[in-house]
Length: 193
Image (cartoon, rainbow, N blue to C red):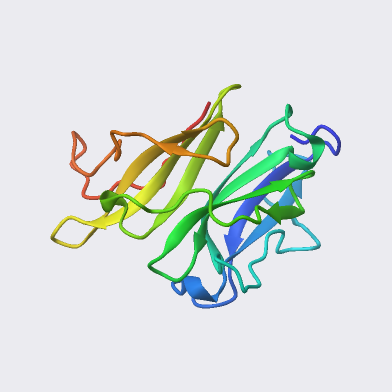
């Protein structure tokens, strides 16, 4: 809950175009509510989309996002967002944005903060889950590759002291299809700290 306004924040992906065409601009929408008990009490932000991708830029739309509030950060960067910045349906990198209030966002101007550069990742990193343990940002992300019989999604892990400069784990991917549950894909990691 936002201390200054007494409201909860919600972030989501929205698009007015074909939902499978990532080149045409999925945007980030924001909403707020004073209560959690009423699922209909959310009000969209009047200036939605709160994070737009008008181009020209390296990111033409969003594909998954993770937001956290960091009360130790400067006031202008209290909210931090990592998102899959789509450059088309097959090329996605991790972007970064910050916000004072969680509703009006500024994208990191230097481009993506994490790119697909390992064979298992293919050309797409997305669906981030980021936590901050007080000293280190920890990110789980989805990479897309081909295991011979079609596309496969795997989970990778990276750490960063500042949320911008990331070091991928040398044992990536940290979670792959199979295991006791017999899954053929793993994706959209959610981590609670």
